[in-house]
Structures are given as C-alpha cells and as structure tokens.
Length: 378
Image (cartoon, rainbow, N blue to C red; front, side):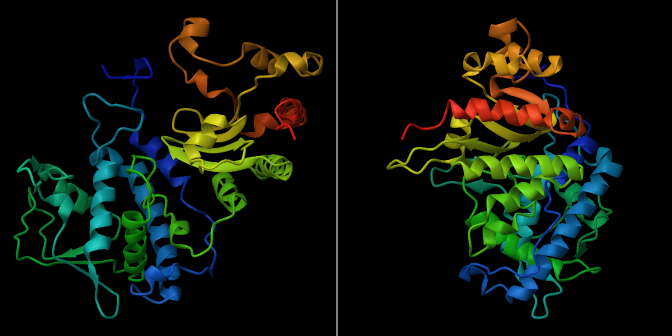
C-alpha cells in the first residue's frame, strides 16, 4: 500500500477532489484589468477578459461533471501517492493546455484548428531515448469524451470509437458552441500557463484549472484580493474575521505570501531585507501563522507558536479547548506522541469555519502576544 508522510494513503472520492478544485476557482474576476503586452497578438483585451470569464464558467461545469459522473472517467491508481491522486486530472490539463497553446483561433474566434497535440504523442530526445505520451493512448479518447460531456465539440473525431484515431495529416477542429468566446480565454490562459508559470505543474498547483488570470495581468496583484477569493466559500462572518487578521498584521509589517503546493497557503512572516529575494516557499518556512486550504483538512488557521512560555498567564485566560490545543503544541506526530503522521509539523491547526467565531477574540490575543515577541529588533 502506498504511504503518505509515513501513513497509508486513503484516496478521496473524485467528487470531493472536484469540490476542492472548484473552491479555488476565482468567484470575482474584475471586468477591467490591463494585460501584459505579450497577449496583444491573441485578441483584444476586452475579448480576452470575456474569454477568461467564459472559461471560468466552463471550469464550474467541469467540476460539477466530475462531482456527478467523475467515477466513470477518473479511475483511481492502484497505488495512490496522495489523497487526490487521479491521473485523469493532469491528463485533462495537458489536453486543454495543448488545445489552447498549439491551436490557432479562426478569424472569427469560434474554433481552434489544431495540427498537433504533443500530449498525445511519444517523443525522442537528442540521446535517442523515447518518452511515452503524457496522456496514455488508452486515456486519450476518454479525455475527449469528457470534454465533450462538458460542452466542447471535436470535428472529425469519432468519440464513439473504442480508441482514438488521428493521422499525422489530420487537422482537429475544436469548438465550444454554447459560448465560443471561451476559446479566446483558453488560448490566453494556456499561453500564460506555458510561458509565465514558475516551476513544474503539480496536481493542485494548476494555473489552468484554477483559472489563474492574474498571471496575465500587467500589474502585480494585491494579496488582499487573492485572500478575498481564497475565502469566498466561507460564511461572511468567517471571511470578515480572516480579513481583519490579514489587515491587522500586514499593517504592523508582516509579509503575506501565497504558496500552492498540494495545500493552498497564505503565510505571514517577518522578512528581513537581504540580497536574495525570498521565494513563497522560503516565506512559508519562516511564517508564524497561515491560512490554509487542503484536501485533507479543508480550511484552517495554522499557527506556529515559539514564545508561549513568555505569556502563559494570558493563555490561562483562554477557553479550556483552546488552552488544550496550545498546550499540545506542534511538531512531528511520530516523535512527539508516537502517532502516525497527521502533518503536525505544519503547526497548530484550527478549523477556519463558524466554530472559530466564539474564540476569535482569544485568537487575536494569542497572535498579538506571539507576534509581539517575534518582532524584528530595530
């Protein structure tokens, strides 16, 4: 059996994974924002922005189809590496990126002409080593069928056939009849994914399935805007509490950084000015607290206290449940408590839902005191 952090991997149902992905799709996309100059050759800025919104709406459909019928397409691997290890998801992403990046928009923008789908073909490197296609042959027709189920149309392909048959001379024509402007959005977002994404694409660090239009923006995005999108599935009171924490600690000099690597984290740390610019992972490792969204735990507030001995009297005034959580501490579950790994090394995890509201004042007091002893010396 595969293991994850020292324990057995229990694969989540594909419907739960789809909900996890759906919650990361931006609910609020501005009507007007400037784009990087590299996208001028794709279409007008207005059409690209309209296309992005259309693609966002398609992603909602895609996730809903995975929730309702995903079991028919997304088959679990024999030895899953993590709780969301469905190879079908990266296959879909590779196909969509290839369609957008390699496809040529028709003059009126209502179809994409595709002469090659690299994810469907094997390759040979300069040393003569053959690399299999990113999408196995037996899954290629299934990927096209699922996209057709979500609204795409593929001219010249028999989706009822047992296997896909596309000759090298064949030109594939792709359309999205219900909202053709989506193809313009797919084209621009695929270029952003291929040319502006940093690092490799993980199953969840997936710019296309998250509709990461911010990669295309000419101006840098305010992290408050990112946090607002991050919080949108939560209740209004929980959102207000989280936004209050963000503003409170950014104002006193903490740096907020987005890190997506399996989990989605907005991490808060004090950063010293140095010669080297810190990466999101660097800032995450230095963080005192974080907002986190994971397939395993959902939405959480995660705190890494190191100075609790300096304000024990304050902690004693907290409700007993919170006192116990703080007293339990954090670290490697196996070393601290001889328990299987529950990612305790990441910090003290508190659910970020309505249950946090009765202790929101104590949470702020706790963070205030922890941070006061962690302030950089002037």
